[in-house]
Image 1 (tube, one colour):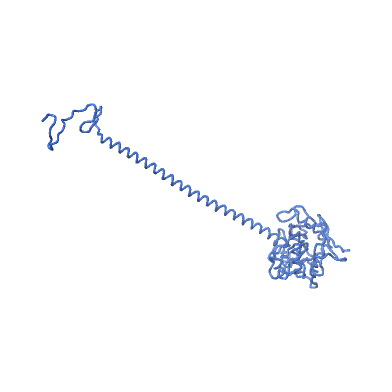
Image 2: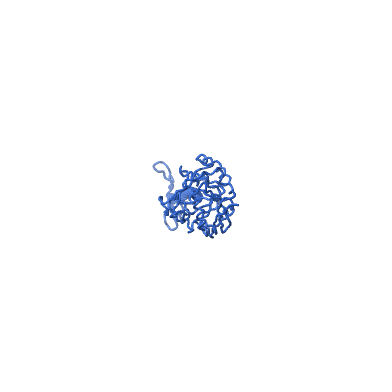
Length: 365
């Protein structure tokens, strides 16, 4: 048996012991030694490298996964917020549009009510701003009774021209002349009051203190405020309403302004609208069903007017206030329209005075 090979107990042979490798090459035991003499193991270095690589890979993979997950989450959150924002903007736009629509409706309704319900008078209470006569000036026990001696006007009589020999009223205004046919047989108290005031020069120099285009022009208040005025009767008492005389507030009608029931004084208005404003009467058919004359309904539809101001409907609660018709413009409606079209302030008072220069009575020849 050679010296270099020996059998071990298991019968295997083994090489002779290896010499030290000073060059750092791998020894039989699998270990290495560097030139500096530090000993490392190949398997240890490999494990360490593998571990570091694994850690580095795991860390890199984890960071990449986290970053990707956050980005998706953020994107989803951003999209959610955008959807919420868009929804809120849409709801806001709808709300704003609704508010604007309601404001328009309310303003239109106010304007219509202003024209249709509150323009000529207040409704039984003091109105010191623009319309009617201050009701505080009159109490129920100071009312001058309307005449009981009258006849009802024939159908359509209101729109006829005055006959020869008839006494009419003439208003010479700063914008032209208006001629009015009067109805003393049908509304004697109102006509007596108007004619007496004219004879006394009461209306000379008085302004049209309130005008509303496509509604009416109003005068008769010496104070020009809409709250003044006297009657021609003893103690300047207000006089009773005269309704149911088959006279209506058709375009061109001359009607008593008031502050409620039986508060007639010197103020009057001329209906100027070219359309029929029925208010609570709804339409011509309803107007007739509540007792309005068919000829008047036809005239309203043809000429325009304010049927809701007709006093005969006050008793059954159809309108808020009635106004006694005592005359009709038969000449000068173009002047009435011209006055109605002047520029006014917020209280419907002309910015430049429009006056009745002179009022007088005249016999038709």
